[in-house]
Image (cartoon, rainbow, N blue to C red):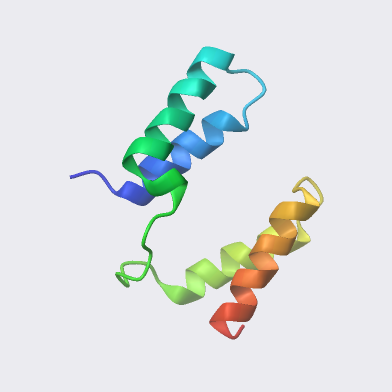
Length: 83
């Protein structure tokens, strides 16, 4: 079975891609809302290496091409992880 986090990530990326059609974005929104609780995926299964996750979040907070909203979200998750 496909990793739900990867599926959600693909649909979220589609929603933020300026090169995709409104029809495609609407489809992604519907899939997220109907099948993935609006895009909230349970990540507590422990399949991911916490240090890799923290590294990615730290990179997000320092990337000048990332929105302030994404930086704030990444910092919040780092705080929750105690990093």
